[in-house]
Length: 307
Image 1 (tube, one colour):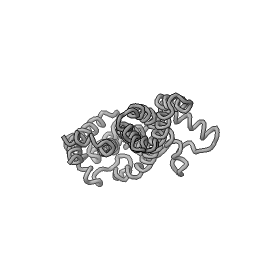
Image 2 (image 1 turned 90 degrees about the vertical axis):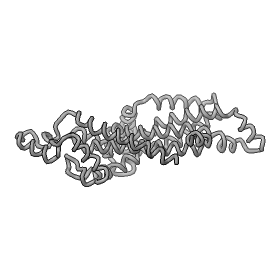
Image 3 (image 1 turned 90 degrees about the horizontal axis):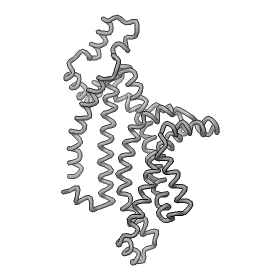
Image 4 (image 1 turned 60 degrees about the vertical axis):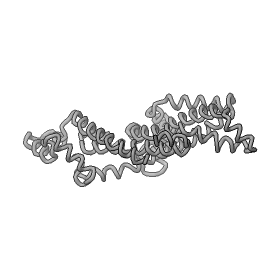
């Protein structure tokens, strides 16, 4: 029932996003028909292209065609390549997901491990080192860190390729750079939440039953501490998808972000609109997944959600 409610709420959300994506794209400077025709084209040739693309139709009719393209991919074609938009997206999407999912997994693993160690060894050298690194990770812009990594690991040391997506090695730097911010956030969150729950009565009860300290931490304290981290993970993953524009541009990865950038540059309206709508769908699904995972970690939230 909870999943059904959330999916029903998602329908008007996606409808609003589709409206915004359709209307705001029209505000992008430039005429797609004029760009496709070239500088030497006559007004008649530009008008013919505009008619062929359907740009001379009323806005409501074009919006209806845009919605029809959601269920009929053959309707939605790129102005620039004349290929179905779904083909353009499916060719690029895996590269974007590799970077986003890889960055989230590495960031989550690093953040949880360092967060637990920092909570257990408060005030030590490890805690101080991680604190400095996490503050730096949160503060540094992705593009600046990406350029720094390219200079160090690709140009100076020659260990990894600087740009492209031809081999698995090409994904190492983008994934590590993307993982920096979630790793820092997860580490600080897990440390703070663990320190908060360490003195709770239910942990003393678990210890009084003879459970080892490691079991008490991992099975009881850490599970409750991860509720907030899961919520942040959902937001971070959505941010990674949205930030793929910057990451893929810096590292030259031909993913969804670069497709969106090139579509904006060429006023390729269908590609822009469906990319934005796809990002919105991902945001909705990620939020739903994090809510379900949060309920599994903290059963008390199930009653609240069911109310």
